[in-house]
Length: 262
Length: 260
Ligand SMILES: Nc1ncnc2c1ncn2[C@@H]1O[C@H](COP(=O)(O)OP(=O)(O)O)[C@@H](O)[C@H]1O
Ligand SMILES: [Mg+2]
Image (cartoon, each protein chain N blue to C red):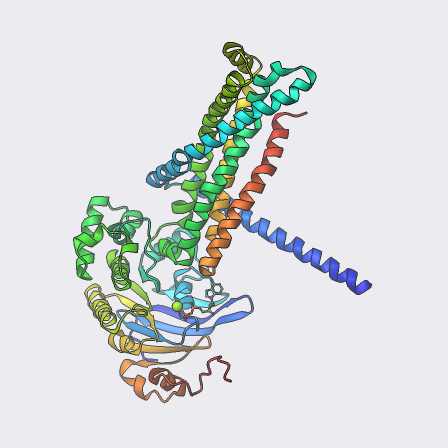
């Protein structure tokens, strides 16, 4: 009995230590990356390329996500609020739901799948084929060359994407509201903007910036430390998407609490 | 050991392990000014790890590595960058950047490292590529479109583009057919002579070693067990060296192969 419980404790201890070590490594990686973000040189060409790949090329998938989310939100809120005769609130709840929560979170998750995975695969391949070592021997800091442009592009482009998602999502709700649920167009638009506050949109954009940083960070970190050939790169890709998604959801809660101190 | 002075690189008692696995176990090696040293040894004996320790890509736990008399173990930041500018490296896998065109690969060290303009760097890159027998048209291709031999030549052009004082070649001929291997050997000899560089190469290809080496050293179990002028390798009096250069399965070096 004693042996069993000490083994059990030892296992828990090992898991805890491994967790602390992993957290420590990620923190060091993040701190190093941030310190390189604020010291020259910055590579404008690479930054621009990443901004295109994170921002511009994610527009279709983010737009599709937003429009269907806005549509289904209008339907659900309509059927839910009809239970206590509050159908008039549909437009307001749709816009608040989209700007505060669904816009940033769904955009973050979609971009994590699209961009985070690609980053991990690219950087992981560069690691296992010695391209990252080659960068160093050619007097180029791999953090500056690979990590910094992705982090900056992520933190800058996600808010723009979310702004687009907000607009498209609200339009989706409007479409369903006026075409299917029988709302008057002018009053739906009025209701949309009447109770909307600046903080609803701003908090969503701040979240977006944090999520963009998380997606890029978790795309770079596992790739940068991957080893063991194609299999290692595959594992890095999975890690990037899973850890970015979970961190986005956790960060979402924390930022929400900070903004709306309830 | 007969070494021309002053020594360019001096490694003393270098130790490097990965977890419980000891890879370098007190390695000593010198490379003289303008000298070409080739390290031979089996796969997985730590040859690449040795080069990476000198370049600071890996950090040895113990020992000293001096480049031009300057201790580089533990060196970081700007200091390390300054020392790295002396080096060129041809990686085992060529390690070309596949997001860049071939000429951009060759010009990389000039543009990013030396701050040369793209146009000037392209000119230099094309000259270096011509030196290794690659035409201008190849410059516009992406590395993935090249054969293994061409990739090695691009890697060679990239390694010599900044005209480094010291060049490392990690298995330059491995995976190539014997003819292409010999072409690469000739290119290495020519390029090195033209630059007057000191070189440290790794190979398990004896034909290549004989061609490019002034001095050969053999690594076994993380140590240099024999080193001497290229002419002496055939009568080294060392059973490990004999077994290696004649490629025998029987001998003091036991491969970990389960025999039925
Ligand atoms: N980054 C690393 N992490 C863990 N083990 C490594 C690493 N790099 C090399 N090794 C191990 O060190 C040993 C020597 O590797 P290497 O120097 O590449 O051999 P070679 O002599 O064929 O070039 C191998 O067993 C390899 O598994
Ligand atoms: Mg090797």
